[in-house]
Length: 372
Length: 160
Ligand code: SF4
Ligand code: SF4
Image (cartoon, rainbow over all chains, first blue to last red):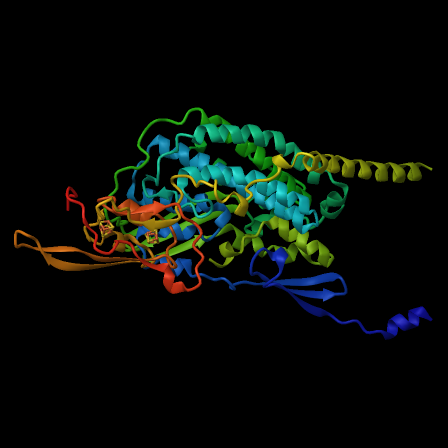
């Protein structure tokens, strides 16, 4: 009887819009989800809701002015974005920056990476229903933001790198504060594991979910911790060192599992590596100028210039096409999150809709970086 | 039998991880000082921003209502989004020479991205970043400010 009844009830595929105003998409990302019951058949991301036209805007700005716009792409990796453009301009002009600038930039980049991963961790917990992590992660991030505020004058949109150097010299308190922070953070990082990593509910929901193979990671161009969790060795800091990364020892975190938990663990491990890098550099910051002498109006020679850096989410590429004027002819940003987003459909097909949020969290999406 | 033991041990291990997590939250529950960051509206009286904090662009004046702005317009050129407008006027100096001075240094706080480029570019150091950050107003016209005070003049020893 019951079997007959089930045959008679027709099921139907539904298209449900997740976003653009959905709290767990962390911004205005719209996902068109094809659902059959609870099973996700297909996910179609629709981007462009906060397209800000940064690439186009740069064409009418002078080179030093471009940098402050890149703060607003991936606002959680603002310093790395600034650094990428500054490095690209310096390469084009063949300006050699002092060792001090290199070390300052590397220190700031690693602090920024830590701050970004802290925010990712606490938001990931919140997406999975653990509100506690949200407060703990933000509390620790606050210390880094204070360090930024003291030296750079801003907490989020730093605009700290300039062509040929950095905006201000380090604040006299910088070293003391960073040392305090690393000491403190080494103590609380195990708490993160105690609170979330080992948690049975968290593990049940993440282990084995949405596996990504190394081949697929390469095919989709997935970089950053997301790609490295699948075994794709893509750390620009290691393979194409810039700034002061060639003078520090650190491990590239490579994992083989490639599932949601693997991506989570890769980021936690990266936090330890960032702490190591900071520890190696903080005691020997070389003396020197914090700003190389630059011309009043910066004009790049004609040609194409490319620079890549490792942001907290993956590989950021800056491509500048110059026709010799004081504005670039065309600027293109290869943003990591844009490439990482499109693997979502591949990861979530055939899974339950509740898992979509978990998978999306470990991709660590920042929407303005997708739309830019 | 074996399956049953395993089943029960998984449950117990799961419970143990929950207790471990609770230990962390419990630790902080009894030490609220360790978990709070800023009690913002309550600590308004004592809150002091860092001296490099970029809150708004201001133009300091001394006690004789003198500022350092020569009206050169370099800050206007360096601003990426047109937040600064410089309006100059011609005056006659006591020696009878014509001279260009600043009439209005107009600053649109509502458009400013607080990037610090104008402050860095100003050759005389006439503008600096202020520490005020509570900028909410009822009407957006209040966000357009004239930075040089009425009746103010250029300081004596500023090189042009
Ligand atoms: S504030 Fe400085 S840069 Fe701007 S017009 Fe005055 S002197 Fe020139
Ligand atoms: S801080 Fe930047 S955006 Fe604001 S007025 Fe100065 S140059 Fe313009």
